[in-house]
Length: 224
Image (cartoon, rainbow, N blue to C red; front, side):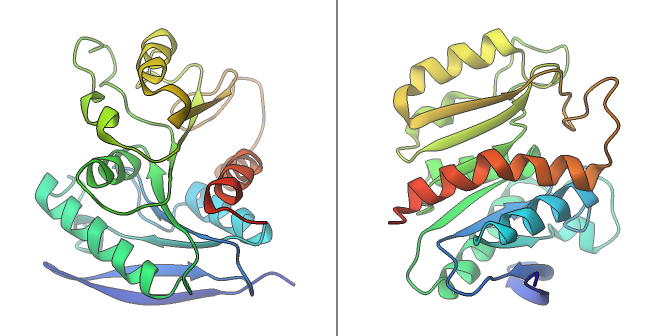
């Protein structure tokens, strides 16, 4: 029987934001997941991914940034995004029963998680569901320098047709990170992991990524 979702609210400096927990009994670890810039925590992609992680006996907590709660389209300032991430991570850590807590997310959500981790957020590891290495067509401005300050393992799930991450540039960045970084390419996938000619809805696409993410999370969390 599938573990039910549990909805709640997290106190953040700007007020409160929604959260959704999936906590299987005896979960091996917890992954905190943030949404991308254009959709909130209930987007089918993220919901499908988290449900599939739950089926793998891994807990997840996903949450909204304040701008989504307020019905706005433009993301909050970086300071607010970071503060929200830190509050969400702390909330998850308090309910993790001493097991490992990892951080990650889709695009913007994952990038902010990485920035927080680079500055000391004690995540056990990071899971990126499409890291936005650069803006489309602006490969001269990479969002990568802070990644070298992260000392924990990182998993990059990345479509090979993602306009936000030129494959050659991404490989160059990951080479500098050494064995801390693991790349799982999705052949033909775009920034939403959609593949031309393959019929699948966003929930199915998100769920499929759990097949690569779950073993990484277990390994990093030190499951025996």
